[in-house]
Amino acid sequence: MGKDYKAIFAKIKAAEPFKKGAKVTHKDDVGTDQEGTVYEITLEQGVGAKIWLDPYRTCSFEDLVLVEEAVSTYDKLMDTFNKMELSDNTEVTLTYEDRVDVMHYRGDAEETAAQETCTIETLVSAARSGLKFSTDLIDDMRDQDHLEDYCRGDFDFESYCTEMIKENFYEYDSFVDFSTEQYDHKRGCTTVTASLCTTISDLRECEHSVDCLEGWTAEFFTGNGNMTVEI
Image (tube, rainbow, N blue to C red):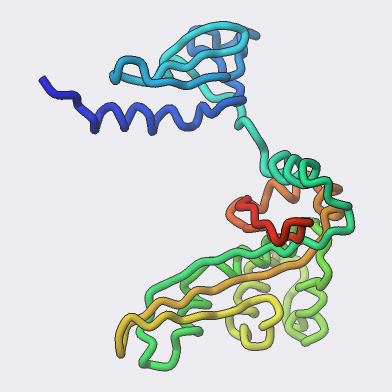
């Protein structure tokens, strides 16, 4: 009988949450202090994944419960900065992209993309995360009188800012960029990119806020040229 490769790869896929360095506990040890650290994941004789733990133990992934991820977003970035021996005043450009199919011949591709992607919502969330950026989005909105109609006490400030920018995105071109690829004379795809600039020092001081940047990309200059890290 041939190997069931679909089942084999499904097992490998299921084991991915237990990456090297992840903290796990055996299902039989729930409620105890029998926590382990994953140090190896292998495929045993083509039938499934085996996971080795430190302290020494071997298990199948079905027997384990994930306690915490191996590396946080903050740790991943800081480890990169430290290995590259970058100074704290190094500038970091953060970008986030989302895209949507559009009918570009109508002339409203950007309006459609602003409404149907999550880029602007994600931008506002990052601007409100507590991180310090070279240009403050909320201050920019205030300078443009786009916050005058907000009623304090509504407890929905981020949603208000998101909708205001979607309606006036052309006034926020230093934060949001649109690019449309035309498939043919009617159909296309519009990518909406948000950009924010900060420094390694500002990222280093806000661990919790950095962990909220999942899905963003960080770009910075090193002695060997520009480097990009997916967060």
